[in-house]
Length: 531
Image 1: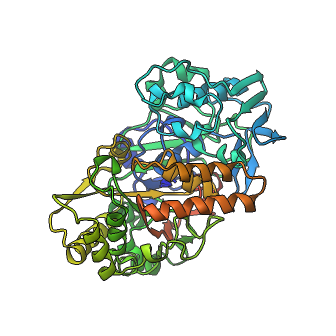
Image 2: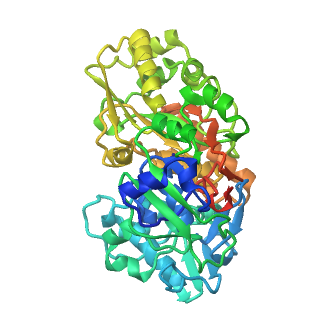
Image 3: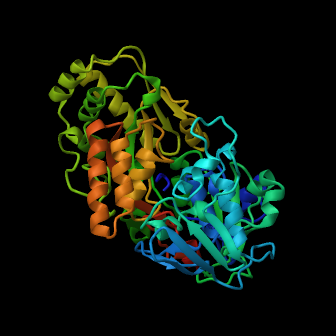
């Protein structure tokens, strides 16, 4: 939420705010039309390479079809690609499945991917998912280290459209996780029409997926998606459309689910879960998740440079107590940087640093020289539970460490990711990661070394171990290096793991066959049936 992530998708239909209200009325207002409504937070962007938000992925995964997709259990499956092959894990040849078209009728070709990926990788565009292209040869030429020098080129040297149906990708080093990487929404293709006016395209994305836009994105309103008649892939919708309705508050979303004004809610507020279990019965949806919450430190401020200070804050937080008080004991307190659903998770890898120990925490705090001035805590408004557990954290830091001046900075969900990306936060902030794809590399490299690193933390030791894992010849060997890198991050604690979410959603009586995965494809909207 990954990360958040870290994530499912779809497309839209013309909708004014007034129309949205009518369309999202009671069950009777929508009965018989074959469409359904999902409540979620407002996306930040809808250009595929310019978001890492799961709320945007909700929409994008239906609008677009990547070369490779994920099954319900996290296995790779070719989608827009006919084949993805390599003999050395460095040079990859991708054959495009023939007969595919964008929603405007334009053919999907190798150039459709080349143009989209170059656009996302070009540093001056400042796209949120830019770093996901860092494995490509030539990435550094598009992204000067100082962030100010004009790039030498706007095209990745490791990216070539050999012909209309063949894509050749050369990476800077062997990367065994590359097919998994291709499942990430940033690697979707874009039509030539997109580049005539990218701002207009953001409001009306033209994709190649099972759903298409009909009308523009109505900000803070709704995005309604309808099936694309020209879709030739395997995710053909079993329904006549889906509306993603934006909410600024999850409690309101849940109220509308109860009232039948929406049909699916992917994450019910923890305070409402006991009631939801009782009222919804078999319509209460549980699932395993990889979404993990963290408390990150803005090291670039210079106020959190001591690892002892960061470990002290970690050990002053009662994860199990918060789990019981806020999440009904359903969440899983973190014992590792990786959730249990991800290969490479080691029980109790975090050890003492993730164990509630006020006395030891105070010793480390004093050793670090304490903390002077105001401590600001940053979180978004997407879920009411964020404010609840931040309040408990604040109380713990006051009681256990003696930090008395603590202030909250609650930011609208649609603005939160950009706040972190701009490094505008001045104190510890809530960060989470939802599995983009089932790999330890996805969490570690992205959260501590790449796009999700909002901390400003750098470690050559960590980066070198990740690189060795990426180039390993087997999954077992790769995990050995990834776990060693995890140990480095745990030792320095630039970001504290807190807990892994429990998947707790709900559906109305109007819909069935609702599957929400633990990965960036999230809700499999095309499978939903409407009664």
